[in-house]
Length: 355
Image (cartoon, rainbow, N blue to C red; front, side, top):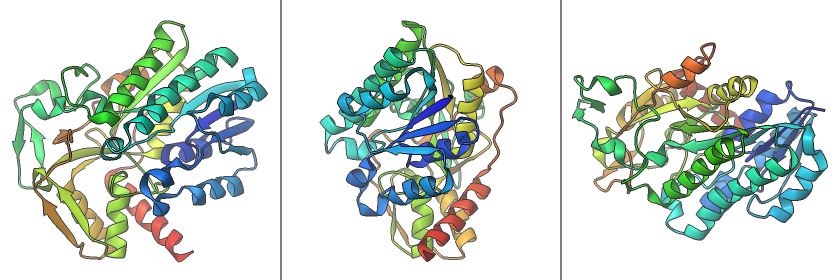
């Protein structure tokens, strides 16, 4: 039997992975205990998504285990052992603002939870491919020291700075920079996944995401940029822009496109490899530009205000350079541009609200 094990299976990337791999594996084993509700409140509960997956995919089996507790994880690995061919580890505490509230919780989920998953994989199914969703926050605020220019609606890399014309690649230093505690816990996990590949020879891949998005995101103010923005556009709830004149730039990758990157890696894996994974030059926007698109799609004028106080360690401009991944896997390319992604988020959100 071929099994894929997915942590954070009711979250954005986890649930996309369940749907993507359901017809490619005999069994999809999901692990998710809805910690997102604890992090961000009842409106961010992923229970609706867990129920949707169970109703949609007959070969989906769910476990409400806590990745911090190896005694809860061990029986799952022992049950399936070498039948597990792929592990997709997406479970995380994902907000750098929230991490400062409970540093122990943040680190235990992001770092210790990842170590638990790696070691249980090594002990039970060492030949499995292990994929980890890291973050661009491992680079800290180093991107803010790149030569940037201000335009009418966004910050942008200076035209004469040729090296970064396609975005930020994997060679940017992760040292001597302010990460936020979230960024630091993800660095620890990121390096662990690399080390299990390089030291133990396991087939591990690290994907440093930009803004990950899609219709199955339970967006909140502290996490889920486009999803939460569209929610405010639909409901009329107030939205606050934090710093940088609203011109801070993010690249946005649809959850399907990211999971498709995982699929390409799985078919031809490497040991301890690292890839930047975002919308790149194909799909990126500033806060002001995103608000405009949300208004156009929803037909509503957004209620928003501006605060001069930016979030600590927040990026002014971040666009991922995916040249390395595309060079390794040339048959992969983006499917969803920014407008298509936001339109899908809008329609999916309206449908959920109607029910």
